[in-house]
Length: 496
Image (cartoon, rainbow, N blue to C red; front, side, top):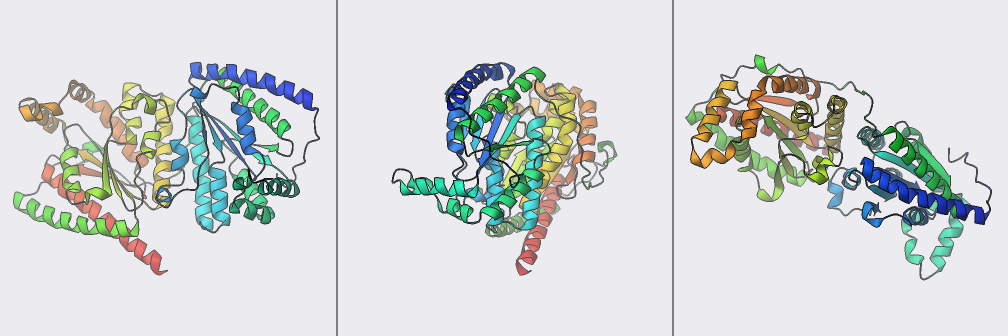
C-alpha cells in the first residue's frame, strides 16, 4: 500500500483550481441534501505529520455553512481523560443526523502512536483493531456515511516541510516532538500505518491520497466526498446487513420458568444488608485505588423494585465515586445519533461505579415493541450490544446486568398500592398501565435478549423480586462476589 504508492505528476494549476471550485460549490449544495435526508457524515483525515491535513480540511469546509459542520482535532488526552475507553472521545464527537464532522486525525493515529510508543501491548493493539472495525461497521449500519482518507508523503518531502515550519518563528510551534520522532522512525510508522489500513478496511475502505501536491489532494478529496454523498443520497440511509458473531453465552432460563417464591425474614435481611453494605464500602475503596471501572445495569418490570434495590446499593458507596443514570426516552440530540451514543457519553472513568436504571437494552424491548426502530435495527442490536459490552470488559470494566423479576399479579398489587397512596402516586403513569397490557409481548422480547446477550464476560442475573428484600440481598451478594473476584484478578496480574 504505502510502500508501493506512486506520487502523481503535477497537474495544471489553473485546471485544478477551476475543478476544485466546481466541487466546492457542489459540496455546498449537497450539504442541504444531507440535512433534508438526515444523513450524518464523518470525514476522517489521517496521514503523516506535515502531509497537509489541516490545509485539506480548510479547503473542504471553505464554502460550507459552518452551522452544520464541526471540525474535531483530537488532543493529547489528560491523565483524567485517559481513564475512559479509548474510543469514547471519538464517539462523543459523532454528528447528529444531517450534519458533518471532520476529524483532523482520529482513532488510527491514536492506536498507531500508542502501539509504537509501547503504551499498549500487542494484544491490546489487536483488541483495538477489532474495536475500530466494530465501531466503524456500527456507524455504517446505523446510517452514517464515513469517508476515510490517508494523506501520504515521502520521507524526503516530510523533512522539507518540517524543516520549513521549524525555521519560521511563526510556525515553529506546529512542529512537535512526536512529529520529529515520526520522521526519524519513518519506516516503522509506514509499516504500522500499512498494517492498520490493511486490517481496518473491510467495512469502510481507505483512500490514500498524494499529499505531495496539496492542490491535487484537495481536488481528489472533494471528488471522493461528493461522490460518496451522491451515492448516500441516492441509496438512502444504509440499514446494515445481518451480522452475528459467535459470543460465548451463559445459559439462561425463560422468565416463565423462574421460581419467584424465594423470600427472606426481616431479621436475616437486616443482618445481611448491614454485612453486605459494609463489605461493599470496603470494596469501593479498593476498586478506586486499583482503578477498576464498574458498570451495573438494571432492567425489569415496572414496579419490580429497581429503585429500592439501587438505593440499598448506593447507600454503601462513597457519593464521590459513583453515578446513577436514570434512562428515559432519548432527547432530540440523542435520538438523532447512534442509539449507543448516549451510553458511551455516560460511561464511568476507571475506579468509579456507574449504575444504569434502564439501559441500551431498550433497543430490543421498548423500541422494538413500540416501533421506534426497524426490525433490521433491533435484530442487529444483539450483536452490537455484545460487541459494546466486550469492549467494556476488555477495557477492564466489571459489567453486571440484573433483570428484576416479578409476576403479573404482584405488579398489579403494587400498581394499585401506588394509585391509592398519595406519596407514591407520582410513581404510576398511564404508560405503566399501557405497558402492562403488553406484558406477554415484553416477556417474549426479554426472553430473547436474555438468551442472546448473557455473555460470559457480561452475564445477566435474574433477580426474584416478589419479595423486594430478598431481591436486594441477592443483588448485593452478586455485586460483592464479582468485585472481590475483580480485585483478586487485578492483584494476580500485578504479581505476574
